[in-house]
Length: 285
Image (cartoon, rainbow, N blue to C red; front, side):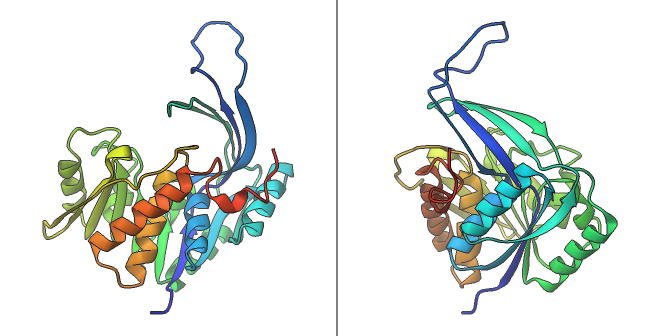
């Protein structure tokens, strides 16, 4: 089966990751980093990296500034095999992530992209219309795209959705397939059902070390265990999971088979200190 044309629209960033023995307390003090590195980040960049690795015909549309961080980010993504269509921004998004080996994390947004120009939104909307599948991530660009009600099937990652956020509502209602994690729910089945009641045909909820579950609009339930892995860094595991599921589905896999492929792709992500191992050889410390 030929690979569908996929466009991913949303955030990418140039990040500084710092591992500490514990997260800082809110008092003046000094701590020493156990290790630190710079790398590409952002939920859309992560999905595009893994889709490209899986042989999917994918293009990434993302805000990137005409600055040194943007140049580093674009060079890293393109060297790792991602085709990037830059959305103009006055600055490149940057984060400082304070992390521990136990998985705790505080993300500091050092800079955020500016509002996309109308011409860039028009170009992104055309790319969505011409694609077979569009992954539209939570962002200002994403909101502007879903407001146009594109006919192309939209795959939306809701991240730590609580089931009632007003910001998420347009994304849920525009989606064909939704992904989320269970960070803000004690009942992922009810959370997924609430999403499906607003239009999507399928909902998938990742549960970290407990694997993932999925629910179809007809009520069919699916579950998969997490793939065994040596955890190096959990950043981007959810993006890798979604990419693995999408690639498998596009090639004709049923939901249960796609979930297994997704779990395996997540294993690849958490085994690397980067969003994808392809960045290991192209990003220095």
